[in-house]
Length: 162
Image 1 (cartoon, one colour):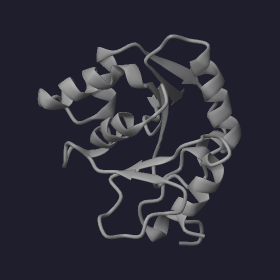
Image 2 (cartoon, one colour; image 1 turned 60 degrees about the horizontal axis):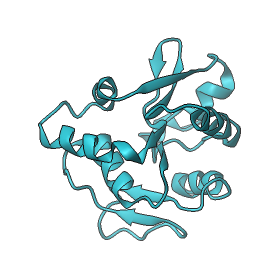
Image 3 (cartoon, rainbow, N blue to C red; image 1 turned 45 degrees about the vertical axis):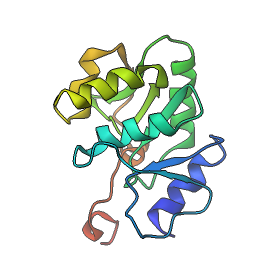
Image 4 (spheres, rainbow, N blue to C red; image 1 turned 60 degrees about the vertical axis):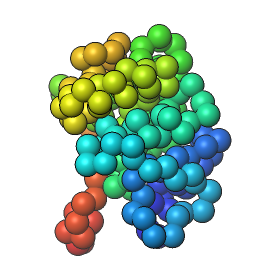
């Protein structure tokens, strides 16, 4: 099963809309998703977050990495419950002091600030934007389940047995 299909199989029961930003032009889109193009080409994940936020019909946006095949429904639900209980602009998981920006929940009300930040030639690092809004952290244990959920696959060698 392609990584993106595995990701969608986890997200589909959780969200009424799945938006993918930065999908390769000309590649067939996965079933059941909306594609959106980046407005700020070359600025990496932060540009994709802005694009998905602009396209979103909901007040909250769960941001995930398209290279994270073992997303955890339980972890996403835990994160969503915490986000709904706070007024934070962004909720990001943190394990041993390290954040996972590609597994975060964003309030779409910060879209204008994100757009302004990108227009101002701010750093394209997602974590640099966090200092400009109310960012809170979901402290998670450093265990096998968390490690697996945050694993990303960038090369065939990253796969078990690869």
